[in-house]
Amino acid sequence: MRDIKEGKARIDDLKPVEIDDLLDRDLVKADKNIMLKSIEGFNICITGAGGSIGSELCKEILKLNPNKLVILERNEPFLYKIESELKNVNQDKVEIISYLGCAANKSLVNNVFKSNNIDIVFHSAAYKHVDIVQRNPVQGILNNISSTLNICYQAKKNELKKVILISTDKAVRPKNVMGASKRLCEMIIQAFSEQELNNDDSSKKHKIIFSKVRFGNVLGSSGSVVPLFKRQLEAGGPITLTHKEVVRYFMTINEAVQLVIQTAALAKGGDLFLLDMGKSVKIYDLAKKMIRLSGLTIKDENNPDGDVEIKITGLRPGEKLYEELLVEKNSESTIHPLIFKAQDQKINSSFLFQKLNELELALLSNNESISLKILSEIIPEWSK
Image 1 (tube, one colour):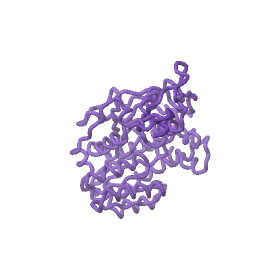
Image 2 (cartoon, rainbow, N blue to C red; image 1 turned 135 degrees about the vertical axis):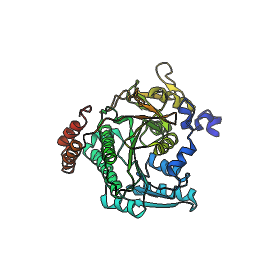
Image 3 (cartoon, helix red, strand yellow; image 1 turned 90 degrees about the vertical axis):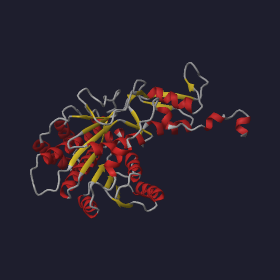
Image 4 (spheres, rainbow, N blue to C red; image 1 turned 60 degrees about the vertical axis):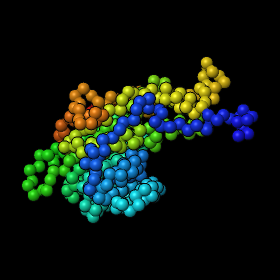
């Protein structure tokens, strides 16, 4: 109060930036009936349960009366955090079982699926930070594809009902290693789906539905621009931006997760679901808005006495200026106005699995050049 009286601070300085204020549109309302149809009464498993998307999936699914919620997370502090949060709101209504470990661990995932009689798995475990994966391509690719392959194999072995892959718009004509690895994960899901749909084994109880959901940037998720800009604002600036014309599509975590859950009810096998994220947002405009919402002013040539400067640092390796539009012309509408379904390209499974075997050998021997070469052979639209 003394600082305010002496003019050293303003009441506006105390104003937090609300995520919803950054969207410039109304929040998307979920269809509760579709969500219940996806979850109620089922045994659900979430990989990467401690991450931004995974933890929100856990919280939303817990509200939808699953029979059992099983969470898998390799990061011990993250697992402790989400486990504590879920127990605080659950009050023993739903059985929650947590596992510390990696989704690429074959015996662990087999035990998780088998001992808990899992019906549906949401596979959100992945390395997702573009810059870090770009600098550590071998580990980034290995983690993302080996976990996806393992989830699919163990799902077949234990006859799950559904496998839902959480993907990204960076998988569309990828420019960076992370995007290429996620595109390969999509292709793995597609290959397993085609095998399953073409399998006439009458001894099987049902055909497993493999599908994937692709969406853009999530406001407030770890590694996204909003938490970064918040930290920079709290430090007094500057806000750093790679390029003045960078454009992205955005959703809140809650919106994205609720739409993902709804796709589980719509999935029929081999589906590629696209979430309509509205109009794209220029990151430069987002930065300016966050400065204003914080009660501060922009420092530039027109206002040299402003509070916070926006500093342009240059595009990073593998960073796109514009992300691809998620909903393309050949997309089909669904019963939800913001969920679209696209026809993914057919997969030559024998070629794919042969290349995956070669890729795994190169990755395990830490051969970066061969690994990237094989990845570019599988995904020719990506060039290293």
